[in-house]
Image (cartoon, rainbow, N blue to C red; front, side, top):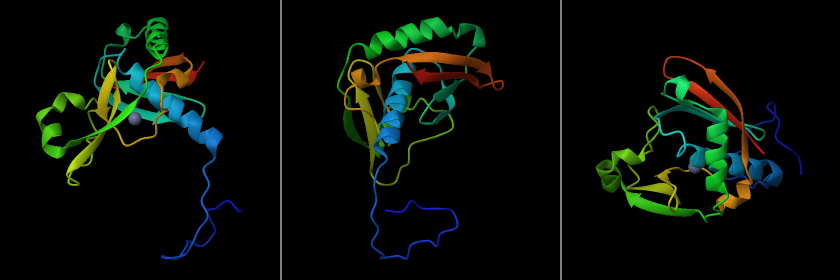
Length: 165
Ligand SMILES: [Zn+2]
């Protein structure tokens, strides 16, 4: 199997391709992504940005930076992770989502509408929000996180960066 390179010609529509997931990379992304869901329940402020890489992830919050305490965020998030709760995918209609705007924590990114239904990630007792990403089946799989940096990235962007512990 060959890996795609930028200079390679694009596949034709209808062409048969073999696809493979780089599982180690995917699983790290799944663990970090799900960790951000959990962390967003410890830092309760509007989310203004975010990014996930295989080795680290971050969320930006619209919050007074003085309220961001790395140790507290780390401890609170890890306490929730230790509950080892199974995650669930649930679907609601566009109308149900419109009726519950509090479900959307991201200020600049609204979930796509028009398909008639929206996918939510539910971590029972912890989090419920629209998300089309990949998640671990049980938050215990995250293991734990460490906050590596808290930085001011703008008036409404106070950035919390984490790695897997
Ligand atoms: Zn998600």
